[in-house]
Picture (tube, rainbow, N blue to C red):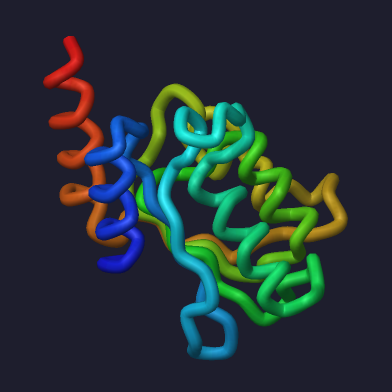
Length: 142
Protein backbone atom coordinates (compact mmCIF):
# COMPACT_ATOMS: atom_id res chain seq x y z
CA UNK A 1 0.00 0.00 0.00
CA UNK A 2 2.96 2.30 0.54
CA UNK A 3 3.72 2.14 -3.19
CA UNK A 4 0.10 3.00 -4.00
CA UNK A 5 0.37 5.98 -1.65
CA UNK A 6 3.53 7.10 -3.45
CA UNK A 7 1.64 6.96 -6.75
CA UNK A 8 -1.24 8.93 -5.20
CA UNK A 9 1.19 11.64 -4.08
CA UNK A 10 2.67 11.80 -7.58
CA UNK A 11 -0.82 12.15 -9.03
CA UNK A 12 -1.56 15.00 -6.62
CA UNK A 13 1.62 16.80 -7.60
CA UNK A 14 0.43 16.59 -11.23
CA UNK A 15 -2.95 18.10 -10.29
CA UNK A 16 -4.80 14.78 -10.43
CA UNK A 17 -7.05 13.45 -7.68
CA UNK A 18 -4.55 11.61 -5.44
CA UNK A 19 -5.41 7.96 -5.90
CA UNK A 20 -2.75 5.35 -6.51
CA UNK A 21 -2.86 1.69 -7.49
CA UNK A 22 -0.40 -1.20 -7.63
CA UNK A 23 -0.77 -4.69 -9.08
CA UNK A 24 1.21 -7.52 -7.51
CA UNK A 25 1.38 -10.79 -9.41
CA UNK A 26 2.74 -13.87 -7.66
CA UNK A 27 4.65 -11.68 -5.22
CA UNK A 28 6.11 -9.33 -7.84
CA UNK A 29 4.92 -5.76 -8.44
CA UNK A 30 4.14 -5.58 -12.16
CA UNK A 31 2.25 -2.29 -12.42
CA UNK A 32 1.92 0.94 -10.47
CA UNK A 33 0.26 4.20 -11.36
CA UNK A 34 -1.91 7.04 -10.16
CA UNK A 35 -4.96 8.77 -11.54
CA UNK A 36 -4.37 10.10 -15.06
CA UNK A 37 -7.79 11.41 -16.09
CA UNK A 38 -6.65 15.01 -16.60
CA UNK A 39 -3.25 14.18 -18.07
CA UNK A 40 -4.68 11.67 -20.54
CA UNK A 41 -7.95 13.59 -21.08
CA UNK A 42 -9.65 10.27 -20.41
CA UNK A 43 -12.51 9.79 -17.93
CA UNK A 44 -11.63 6.09 -17.64
CA UNK A 45 -8.00 6.67 -16.63
CA UNK A 46 -8.58 6.02 -12.94
CA UNK A 47 -5.59 4.58 -11.12
CA UNK A 48 -7.14 1.12 -10.96
CA UNK A 49 -7.96 0.99 -14.68
CA UNK A 50 -4.50 2.24 -15.66
CA UNK A 51 -2.82 -0.29 -13.36
CA UNK A 52 -4.96 -3.16 -14.68
CA UNK A 53 -4.16 -2.17 -18.28
CA UNK A 54 -0.44 -2.05 -17.56
CA UNK A 55 -0.51 -5.40 -15.73
CA UNK A 56 -2.46 -7.10 -18.52
CA UNK A 57 -0.06 -5.73 -21.12
CA UNK A 58 2.93 -6.89 -19.04
CA UNK A 59 1.50 -10.41 -18.72
CA UNK A 60 0.09 -10.57 -22.24
CA UNK A 61 -3.26 -11.61 -20.78
CA UNK A 62 -6.27 -9.56 -19.72
CA UNK A 63 -7.08 -12.11 -17.03
CA UNK A 64 -5.12 -11.37 -13.87
CA UNK A 65 -6.08 -14.52 -11.99
CA UNK A 66 -3.09 -14.57 -9.63
CA UNK A 67 -2.94 -10.83 -8.96
CA UNK A 68 -3.66 -8.58 -6.02
CA UNK A 69 -4.70 -5.00 -6.64
CA UNK A 70 -3.78 -2.41 -4.00
CA UNK A 71 -5.53 0.95 -4.24
CA UNK A 72 -5.71 3.93 -1.89
CA UNK A 73 -9.48 4.44 -2.25
CA UNK A 74 -12.44 2.08 -2.46
CA UNK A 75 -13.01 1.52 -6.19
CA UNK A 76 -15.95 3.14 -8.01
CA UNK A 77 -18.44 1.08 -10.00
CA UNK A 78 -16.46 1.47 -13.25
CA UNK A 79 -13.26 0.24 -11.61
CA UNK A 80 -15.11 -2.55 -9.81
CA UNK A 81 -16.42 -3.71 -13.17
CA UNK A 82 -12.90 -3.73 -14.59
CA UNK A 83 -11.65 -5.70 -11.58
CA UNK A 84 -14.40 -8.28 -12.19
CA UNK A 85 -13.64 -8.47 -15.94
CA UNK A 86 -9.92 -8.94 -15.23
CA UNK A 87 -10.76 -11.73 -12.76
CA UNK A 88 -8.61 -10.16 -10.05
CA UNK A 89 -9.09 -12.42 -7.04
CA UNK A 90 -7.92 -10.04 -4.32
CA UNK A 91 -8.32 -6.32 -3.66
CA UNK A 92 -6.73 -4.37 -0.82
CA UNK A 93 -7.76 -0.75 -0.39
CA UNK A 94 -7.26 2.13 1.99
CA UNK A 95 -10.05 4.65 2.54
CA UNK A 96 -13.76 4.07 2.01
CA UNK A 97 -15.47 6.25 -0.60
CA UNK A 98 -18.83 7.31 0.83
CA UNK A 99 -19.95 8.91 -2.43
CA UNK A 100 -18.91 6.33 -5.03
CA UNK A 101 -17.50 3.19 -3.38
CA UNK A 102 -18.52 -0.05 -5.04
CA UNK A 103 -17.44 -2.54 -2.39
CA UNK A 104 -19.59 -1.47 0.57
CA UNK A 105 -20.09 2.28 0.73
CA UNK A 106 -22.59 2.80 -2.11
CA UNK A 107 -22.71 -0.50 -3.98
CA UNK A 108 -21.66 -4.11 -3.42
CA UNK A 109 -20.45 -4.98 -6.90
CA UNK A 110 -17.27 -6.83 -5.99
CA UNK A 111 -19.03 -9.48 -3.92
CA UNK A 112 -22.35 -9.69 -5.76
CA UNK A 113 -23.49 -13.30 -6.16
CA UNK A 114 -25.27 -12.20 -9.36
CA UNK A 115 -21.92 -11.82 -11.13
CA UNK A 116 -19.67 -14.59 -12.43
CA UNK A 117 -16.70 -13.49 -10.30
CA UNK A 118 -16.41 -12.26 -6.72
CA UNK A 119 -13.40 -10.58 -5.19
CA UNK A 120 -11.86 -11.12 -1.77
CA UNK A 121 -11.56 -7.62 -0.33
CA UNK A 122 -9.47 -6.28 2.54
CA UNK A 123 -10.57 -2.71 3.29
CA UNK A 124 -9.04 -0.10 5.57
CA UNK A 125 -5.31 -0.69 5.03
CA UNK A 126 -3.58 2.61 5.92
CA UNK A 127 -7.06 4.15 5.72
CA UNK A 128 -6.25 7.26 7.76
CA UNK A 129 -3.21 8.10 5.64
CA UNK A 130 -5.11 7.50 2.40
CA UNK A 131 -8.07 9.61 3.55
CA UNK A 132 -5.83 12.43 4.77
CA UNK A 133 -4.13 12.66 1.40
CA UNK A 134 -7.49 13.08 -0.34
CA UNK A 135 -8.86 15.49 2.26
CA UNK A 136 -5.82 17.75 2.15
CA UNK A 137 -5.84 17.74 -1.66
CA UNK A 138 -9.46 18.90 -1.81
CA UNK A 139 -9.08 21.36 1.10
CA UNK A 140 -6.53 23.30 -0.95
CA UNK A 141 -8.95 23.50 -3.88
CA UNK A 142 -11.92 24.84 -1.92
